[in-house]
Length: 306
Ligand SMILES: [Zn+2]
Ligand SMILES: [Zn+2]
Image (tube, rainbow, N blue to C red; front, top):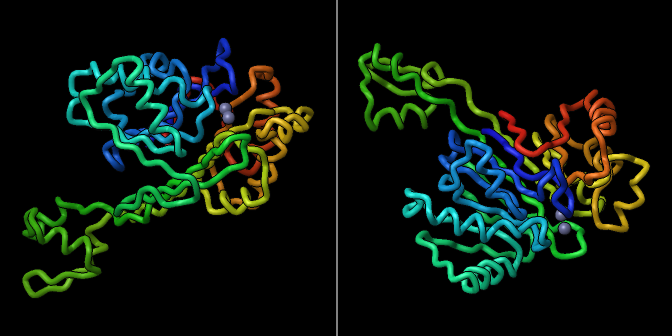
């Protein structure tokens, strides 16, 4: 999986930080890309990447503040003009109100889309996706309007079959391969084999926590406890500014330090960064936290393999 940040700023677009959006490239795992939030000019940022808008088939909106949704209509209407977009619809997940926001805007701009848009709205903690590979659930945060975090859990997956090794035994590709993968052992020519001899290592469960705009509340520790990867807002990077965080319903670096201490997290990304901070502040944050886990302060267009 790959993660690319499109906008990493807080509130207003700044010279080097656009408003919020990032994309997970799950082409390997799920054959699709997922976008999280879509601030103004997100489509312009996409033009500077290798992301194909038609591959984005799920959009997850955290809340209805302008810096998280103003790019949505532009993104959808431009996606309309892309040649192969007809078959690939989009599902938009978000708090109650997102459906009306999108529909009304499309109506007022006389934009009729040639692909399907499905809406999944919610107003509480709930599971919104559950298939054999992945589970996604929502998590209510503590912002000045209704705002949701997301948890993505990739389930433990069996390794892939070594077809060459099986062919050498005389077992050609076919429905029997499925049995080999699903059962612990199999019989072929009156000999019993352990399936594990023909499988690569299992892919262990992977848990990703996404924390958009919120102020700190103690249950956040529980939410991130088993995470492997956390992507969190951290509007106030300098601990001297931590007092602004509570008042403005955002997180400071002290809040982040608090909740990661009780977490299994190995990889931390901080985004939604106030434009007031320079590289020196960023460096000192990374040096302080990086002793135990790998941390990155996200910048627009940064791309990571995970
Ligand atoms: Zn915001
Ligand atoms: Zn907000």
